[in-house]
Image (cartoon, rainbow, N blue to C red; front, side):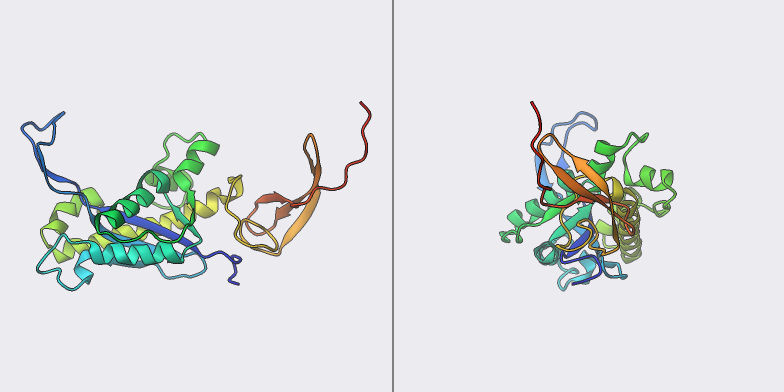
Length: 250
């Protein structure tokens, strides 16, 4: 068991290319022909119980000099990461990262990973808070967690696709830093997450810590449960089994 409980928890972020296509007009255009679909450019990730942030990009794979747009190797790496994870965390995971991962696996005839649960920090921010905006950039600055790198994806993607290795280094740094911000945001929002996947079978179900205190009771219409407060992550939980109910007058 690691310090976060039984579950293997993955934080990850994807950088992808735009679609390359043919159009007659620049605005409100119908794409006449797709020359090249969107594809993975880089992946950054870390495991919640580890310090190091990893990153891989297209130039890291053999054959890059012959085909600068083939992401099959990168997709296979992503598939193995998701296959190992019990829980994955990403900003806009349900609307973007997880779907992109599935789309690229299907494109390359790669079988899906084993099932995993998702924590989407974008969904958490929208559901539980009323910030002025919910982008990773805005939330990180608003909550004092930091800011994105000065050079961003939209500044250099075209240089990367042309094979500029210096631009690729900047892309990887941008990708890694997003995972750093993601982790900080996850920890900041975690105490407010009401449906966090079960991390461990003992102690705090959200972080796996044994440093929990009993804090009164939670009553529903049909049952009473002992309530607990985690002294490490700040999350609230309750016991799984209800206490015996006394007969009530009607």
